[in-house]
Length: 337
Image (cartoon, rainbow, N blue to C red):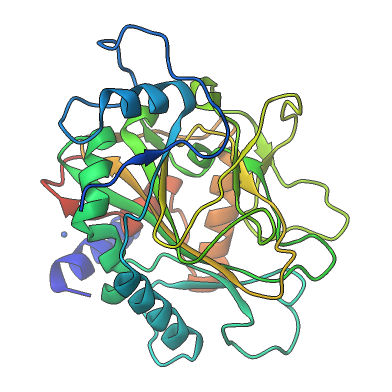
């Protein structure tokens, strides 16, 4: 970690201790025949004017809250990310702040840390090899269509969805990503999620509910699943089961960009392989933090603060502080976040 990053992180912590505070690509709407927006093409809420997205692409995102760009990330880059993930699993590298997660069915077993035990790594912003994903020009080119030119990387994640144990714990409940972020406005946040191999319903592809990015943030909690649920896998408790679902079948290198209020999740992995994807949430650097106390997001703040206290002895931090520590500038100027 460079000195400026280290100083910034230290400033946040010390501040709470009472001390002073550092090739062209095309949109692919998936196999579902989804409608384009019928509104005036000059009236856009969710995309910004530039010469990257076509009018049809902008209309599609405006109406549906997501868009898939085919073959965006190269095989060579994906292979590098896969190799670095394997190094992390072998503990050959130990990036600062990295969170290694296991599926709940093996979390308490004596399984050693290995690629077969790790279901996800989060917060890889201090691993320069994995963090290259967040800075790829081909990714940022599209991110800027939603955030504008000053871009912060917020949340980084490489998912290694394991074969389901039979308890269906490899599922991810339907949710909205904004539940985790005390950042507004939501329209200036976007997730880039890249398939690292062929992904379909058999190995647990993403499922989205088109148009739900127009909803408000819904209350989230842990689902009452008989086989258990993974840590931080919050879901919408009363999700409308009549809402049409679209399963995103993707090839290696395909990338979906989606709004933080879009309701989405993923099914269980019914294969014997480990389904991999890499992702990053981005926000405009001129976004702002909100206090989540008294809101539906208070439960996630309490859980994250409890984890920080138990693991690191840190107290009196807020959800805002947590994300300040993760956020990293990738383009333009750091303003508020």
